[in-house]
Length: 402
Figure 1 (cartoon, rainbow, N blue to C red):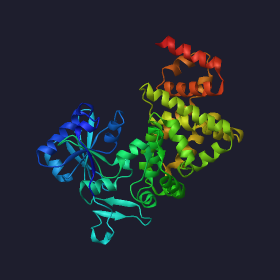
Figure 2: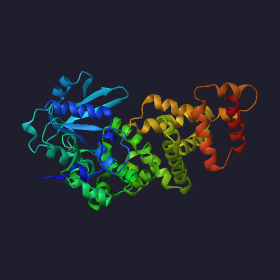
Figure 3: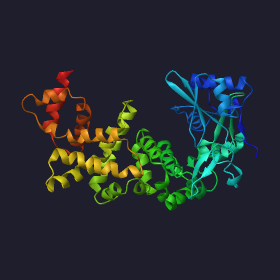
Figure 4: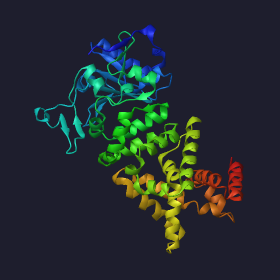
């Protein structure tokens, strides 16, 4: 298959918009006689005049050959063997071109290629050509290459046309591709929300059919993907796509059913995500514990009240509600224990914000958990139009501290 190739005068991608670290990796590979491309989302974002958050390199050099070339390199991964080339403050992920999923799995040793019982790819280190690698990628808009040898854009999958149409299209049969890697379904929602694109109908219908296969995805990987969903700066739009495709239910069934019961609960989530997007656009860093505290805060308060009504002391109820919920979703999204404890602190510290007498406020103001608890309290108070006097008290005290 002949690719579509845009020569340098025909596109807007410039080396000055690519990180110097990625440029060094590309030229070193090229000078050693290897093919070297910027691949995937970096090319997509450059073509859309966006700022890529990272640059991935694809090459015909094997991981071992890459490691010999770069002293600042380490190899990672079993499912996909990758080279991470380490620079100060930046990691350039470098992958060898991959071949298609083999029809005869028995022809490959288990350490090279293996699938699970449900057809999900568990290990895949079969190397191939640039065309094969492009057609192995998830969506057409992520299968574009930038060739450092002549500064051209190479398109084997129709990604350039789909960029123009603002369409998220799966490469190959969507049912097969989502079975190979169920996380691709929530990636589709993230790209649609982030880029303002539409999911092509065949892919959309396939997501709706296959959404329950998300339960097969590795829970640790799901945790990483959930952070990307809500830290992307377009969390509200991404969430709306999760709702449209009904992906929210297999990700967190109890929470999603609880939202469905009351529009006010849904409004809380939307307001929270809008706040996350405002912080992101202001380049403020929001760590995972605060994200989960805000996202699930209304639900946790609901669980806490049930426990209090049953006789559990408020402080214990706060911690029990958080642990019960977040540990319960770990089969689908493995939330680290440290994050669960931090969310518990944020929720239980809401009780300390009710105390304004004596020296307690000053002591709490200097507590390491104060800022997260205060930010949650501020967002919650404004969303519900409550605790105005308390919010003014703590805001004033915080300003005096500065």
